[in-house]
Image (cartoon, rainbow, N blue to C red):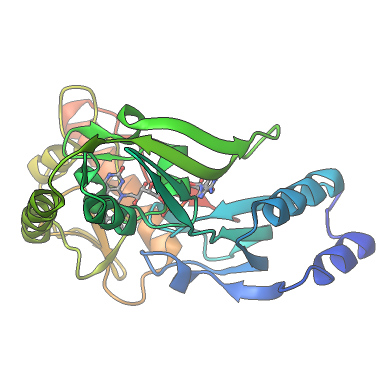
Length: 280
Ligand SMILES: Cc1cc2nc3c(=O)[nH]c(=O)nc-3n(C[C@H](O)[C@H](O)[C@H](O)COP(=O)(O)OP(=O)(O)OC[C@H]3O[C@@H](n4cnc5c(N)ncnc54)[C@H](O)[C@@H]3O)c2cc1C
């Protein structure tokens, strides 16, 4: 049975701040995809929990959205309710820092350095939110969030665990040195990744003992194109949206890369980017 009953639609339309048919492309780093049937930005954890509970009770599909930096949204958009988590508070207590799920990891990296704490510099390479980073155990330059994470506050319904905030344990140190290291890491990244063009970060997971970017390059696929979706000539594990790429173009390119890498090297690449919405 469809979730689009009269009473469900009335419930959704009565939620304060709700928008219908809200474009999502501009809320993702890829800049691709159709609208959310319904869309809400929520900062108060209780409001987010209430929204999720309401959806579950009524059988309404929902999706939590952070900064949209690891998503490929389908051209036909996302069914049900998309909740963008925007609680961005933070609190430094000694060597522990607690941050709201909606705070960007890069911003938190700077807050941590300002507090003369070390051990979070890697986060300058993760453009997503704290919530998205906990959900995916984000990492960069050989360090993963789980190595410093001491607590993730949230709640776990049957499907779609909500992260409300995270606490990380760091060490005292020189904040200026942390900033210099982050500036150096950012410069290096800017030289090796197509950060000026719309993208979703790494498209594929690295297979054990190898790198997806190396395999894509070795298969001669740098520069391969489907419509306006192009395998970056700078880094084989990035697909860039040259302007008007559709989700269908991008999926075709992802599948083409997977088929070609499998044919050439016998290795099955797996997407790292999460595909959400109505694909069929
Ligand atoms: C240029 C670029 C470079 C990148 N480099 C890296 C890198 O070095 N390392 C790395 O790990 N990643 C990298 N990424 C990918 C991305 O930044 C991370 O995966 C990040 O953790 C995604 O966070 P987000 O807020 O954007 O999540 P979204 O893309 O918005 O969502 C991703 C998933 O997280 C879930 N989610 C979001 N918020 C919450 C929440 N509060 N509670 C529960 N679930 C939630 C969503 O439902 C979805 O399933 C890169 C991306 C880009 C564009």
